[in-house]
Image 1 (spheres, rainbow over the protein chains, first blue to last red):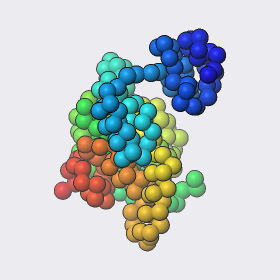
Image 2: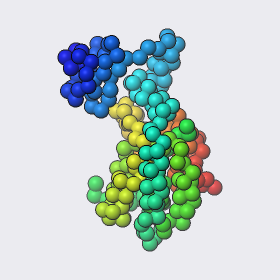
Image 3: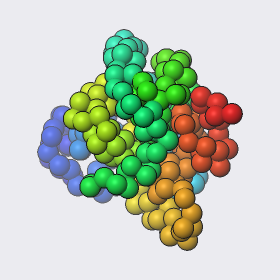
Image 4: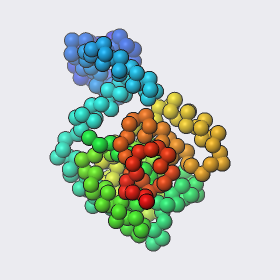
Length: 113
Length: 134
């Protein structure tokens, strides 16, 4: 295990991606903008989590992150400001033709990516 | 929290006031302030490419700085990509785009409640389309 992780501190250093690196004693370690932590689940919760991960074809961690985003979305205040900004951007452009959205597949095909 | 998938056609319709469905899209969007808006990277790439081509750099910046911050990015795992790629190959010369097919797979995988789109192809997902395309 990465020494910085064992010390329980927050670090930007890489830690090896092996299961044994699940951090014990509640300590944290950052890995590519992801905080590694340890949680306890019932057998039934773990079974359902595994099933859902298998159904989606993603790691169990991805299902957990998804659930967290659903249950505890980002701060309402910052979301509200961001949404107001997004709303203000609507209608900012005039294609003259009005068919951009309808033809986006065709247009994308014409673009030099 | 309602989870709503955001398609390229919705993003472009929101930006383009000349689009006959712009007002409907804007009204729909205004009602989604509390929704979990989601998309994936291929929609972002497609939207940026078309917006930059049609609306210039400012179009791309509007997407990046103003619209996309409220839309959460869902991952496209290599397995999902490969599965869609195989289905896309088998479907040719069907008119459904590769990006749309990835969207259909993501919608199914992540239990999306509705799709914000102007594209009737999304009807195959079985989720409600908003605004109504009827």
